[in-house]
Image (cartoon, rainbow, N blue to C red; front, side):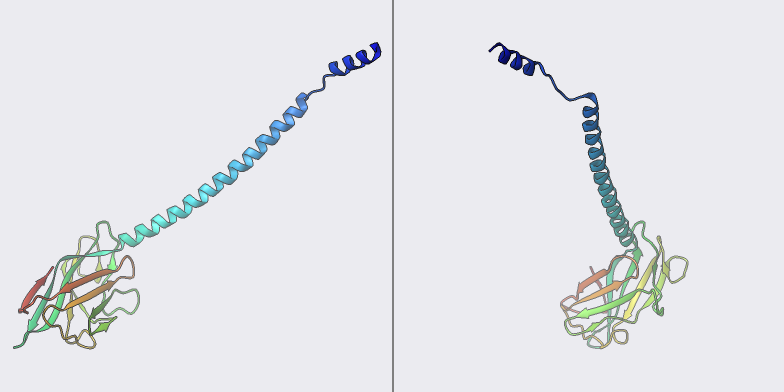
Length: 197
């Protein structure tokens, strides 16, 4: 019995544990795994922030290239029955906007005006541009003001027959920036000159 107790005593005193080398290996493994995980997270974050930055810059470029209408749309009517003859409106670039090409005779990189009402759709209306403020070139630059005029009888195909209370839409599509939609309704009684807001 004494032998058995000594055997159990020796077994109980046999203290095996983790050595410093084993602890260092486990610690290094944790550090390596954490480093790899941090690298993956940071790389993903940098990639997604770059994509977000590209999206923001694309949006800014589109917004900066936009133009806006200044004032109302002026419609003139002529003849004994007062048929709509001309539609004109003034445009300028948005605040901090990029220059917009306004050459109606250009073949590439040009602004296109489309006309729509209940009966007529013309995706490329003939228009003229008159400089009000600016250097006189065909580029609408910041600080400039140009008037776009559409001859309803000859510029729109087929020629629209605009009656009182009829709505029409002009869509100015620029090569840079957003599209400018101008929707107006004629008054109940046509006059020689009508300012539509």
